[in-house]
Amino acid sequence: MEQCQALEQIQTEFQVNTDHMHAIVKQFVQEMNKGLDHHGATVAMIPSFVSGRPTGQEKGQYLALDLGGTNLRVCQVALLGDGQYTLHQQKYVVSDQLKLGDMRHLCDFIADCVDDFISEHGDQHTTLDLGFTFSFPILQTSINSGELKQWTKGFACANAVGKDPAVLLQDAFHRKNLQVNIAAIVNDTVGTLMAHAYRHPETTMGVILGTGSNTCYYEDISQIKKDFNHGKTLSDEMVVNMEWGAFDCERRILPLTMYDNKMNRESVNVNEQLFEKMISGMYLGEIARNCMLYWIDRLVLFGGRSSPELNTQWRFETAYMSTIQADHSKDLAATKHVLEDIMDLPAGSTTLADRQLVQVICQSVGRRSARLAACGLAGILSHKNLVVGDNGQDDGSCLIAIDGSLFEFYPDFEKNMTEALVELFGEKMRSRVRFELSRDGSGLGASVIAMMASKLASQ
Image (tube, rainbow, N blue to C red; front, top):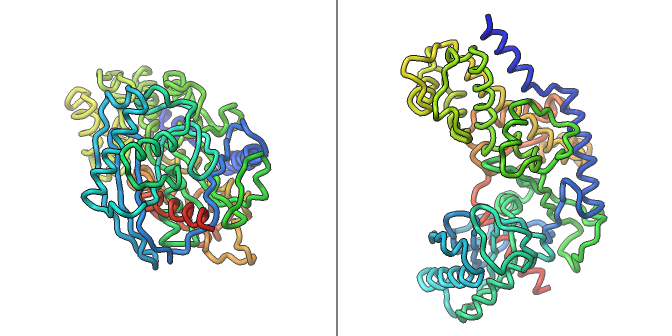
C-alpha cells in the first residue's frame, strides 16, 4: 500500500500538465523578448554574427578546431556541394599542465597540433580558413572575435580571461608561420544548426540535448533591439544563441520539486542554469537518486537499505536511467543489475515492487525533461509564428536539428517531446515539426560557418 501511494505521489510531483506547459511557454516568450531587447537578461539571446543560410551547394576546403574537454580535435572538411562533404580528423590530448598553465603555452600547443595535422593531411602552401569551436563562456563581438568571460571544464589558463581567444591563437599561428586564418568562433549549438543546414537548408533550429542543453534559431536582425555592431551581413536574419539553460533562474514558473532543490543546493552553480538542470543528462540521474533516497529514508524502498554508491552524489548516472526505462523483462532483470551490481545494493535485496518503483521514478524524471524541453521549443515556435506555415498551411517544413546523447539514446524522449507539442498546439504538430539527429557540429558545422565568414569577408 505504501509503495502504491509513493508511486502516485512521484507521478504527481513530476507531472507537468497542459495548463502549466502553456504558462511556461508564455513566460519563455517573454524572456526571449527581454534578451533580444537588452543586455543582461536571464535568457541572454546572444547574436552569433552568423547571417544567411547555407544552400548545400557551397564548395571548398576548410579547417575546424574543437577545444573544450580532454581532447583537442583538428578537422579538415571538404564541402563538395549537393550537401555532400568529406571529413578527416585527428585528436590530441590536452594535458592538465596545459589546462592550468599560461594561455600562450596552450595556444602554441594548438598551433603545433594544427601544423602536424596540415603536414599530414593538408596543403601547406594554401591559406586555409578555420572555424574554431571554443566551448567556453564567451561574449562574441563579431563572427571571429569575442571576450572570454571565464574558464570551465577544468581549464584555468592564465592571461586569457577578458581577452580574445581568436587573437591569442592567431598570434600563435603567426609565430609558427602557419597559413591559417581564424574565420569564425563557433558555439556548439550554432555548429549543430549549420551542420544540418548544409545537408538540409530548410533547418530552422539547432538544439543540444545531451550532458548540457542549449538552442539557437534564425532571428530577423530587425528584432534584435539591443546594441551590437553587426556591420554588413549576408541577409536580414542572424542565428541567435539563446543560452536557454538559464531560463527562470528567478524560480517563477518551473515546477521544481524537493529533489531538484536538493540537487541545486549541492551543485557548484547554485540557482544558476535551472532549466538546464531540469532537462539535461548531467543532472537527471542525480534528481532520480535524490528521489530514491527520499523513499529509502521512509522505509518504502529497498526496506530502508541503501549503499555507499547510492549515497554518493552524482554516482547514479542518467545512462542507468535509460537502461532501467528500457527494461521490459518480466522480472526487470536489467534494473536489478543496475541496482545490485552497479549501485552495490545487497544481492537479492530488491523486490520486484522495488524495481517497479525505481522504474517509475526514472520514467517520471525523463518524461518531465522531454516535456520541459518541448516547452522551450514551443516558445521559439510561438515567437517565430512557426506553429503554422508561412502560407497558413501545415506544410511540415519546420525541421529541428538536435545533437546529444539524451535525444539520441534516452527511451521515448522524442515521443514525449512530440506529445507535449501536440498538447500545446494540436495534432497538426505531428506533421508540422520534425526532429532529426545532427552530429558533428564542431567539424562540419564549424567549417560551414568558416565558409560563410569567408564569403562575407570577400564581399
